[in-house]
Image (cartoon, rainbow, N blue to C red):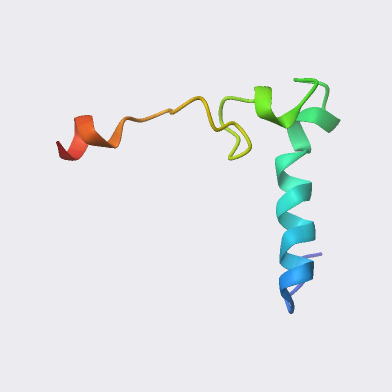
Length: 53
């Protein structure tokens, strides 16, 4: 059942849960390795300059 986000601490907890989903599923060893993750700072799925440039 969905829960209402009522505090910053709860928000951070839920955001971290989402980031760790590919790790829990065994797709990657670390969230940083998941190309679609916000934890992955090195990869970019879309170069915005190429869209808006």
